[in-house]
Image 1: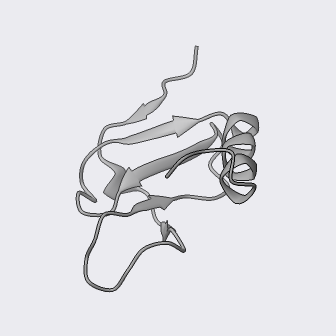
Image 2: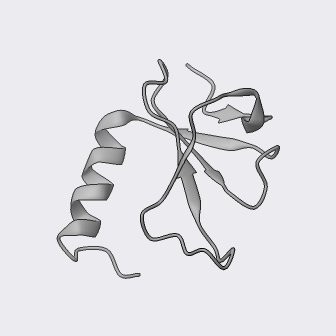
Length: 73
């Protein structure tokens, strides 16, 4: 099984913030595209902390549900 945690997420380049992030430093997540193991996600306030890797299909379903209002926020 592939490891689903990156211990030091700052070791990877190319993170992008959620479009729901604000400029006041509020709670937000960052994602990394084109990672071979899936979609890494980290807390933008802790860039050297861990990142969780989600399977691409699961992440796509989650985003689709968010956009369609299927996931409470």
